[in-house]
Length: 124
Image (spheres, rainbow, N blue to C red):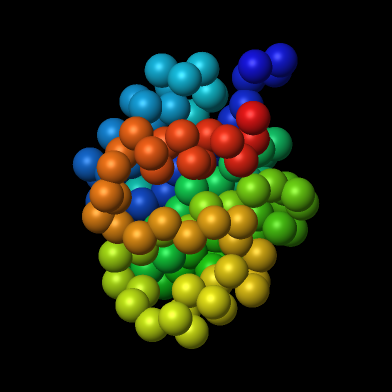
């Protein structure tokens, strides 16, 4: 990598955040991680993030869609990966993609290596 790419990972499941953070750090990324949307938006205000990986459904009133909008406001052009284990309808996935997500990934992940590779390729 020419310059160290910055990834922001947001998920209310701390285990998922920790696993993804370790994976991307091993690949040479600078990783920011949060378990809530509000502090994630603060990171977006302060840092130039190359890629956001965000759960769509989170507690505390700030959804993945809210984080996506903040990403578009504070870091235009940033790639956004939406993930969820709760979006079952085609319309819900279509909606987040229409709003600007680059990729949608269903949890639980079928193969973590494949998911990591797919996400990393967005900023390669």
